Image 1 (tube, rainbow, N blue to C red):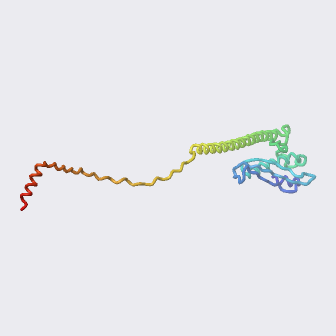
Image 2 (image 1 turned 90 degrees about the vertical axis):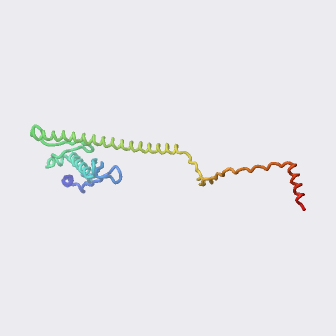
Image 3 (image 1 turned 90 degrees about the horizontal axis):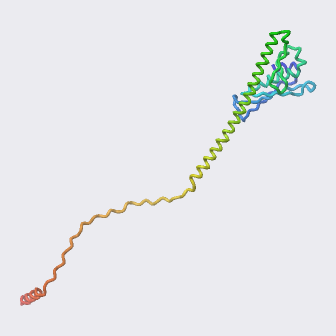
Length: 215
């Protein structure tokens, strides 16, 4: 639809989409910001951009296209009012609230009630998107704070562990020695009794006996 409106308004180039992920290599289900740009002749429109955020690049592109479509409807109201695109929702540039233009309630009560319901539903949708954006920002902030606290806790634990260990004392290994030899138990040796001293008289008698025996 955005391409059709661009051709109806005689814009030169097709819409260009450019996405921005919160981190490099973001996944498809992560929140993405998309900027869509349309270009035209200088006398009509030099260029115009619209921005939208959503989960995933494709969804964000659709939201950005809807935003651009509504803003072009508002900017070129005089040219589109008399065409079949007059019932497209309109938005002021940079806002998220659509304005539905159509038959008044006096001339067509059913059409007026339908436009009123569409406007109310769009208001609820815009409020839900706003709260989702705020919630996503809060979650990102809490995640970053939690990661910072986790790093601080790891650093504190590392400092505590290093202070407990202290300097290490190097000890040399002791040389292994065998058991001392076992002493054999020696039985006590009997002490020989000393010879009793002989009497001088007995010695004299032995000497006389020896003399008599000599021839």
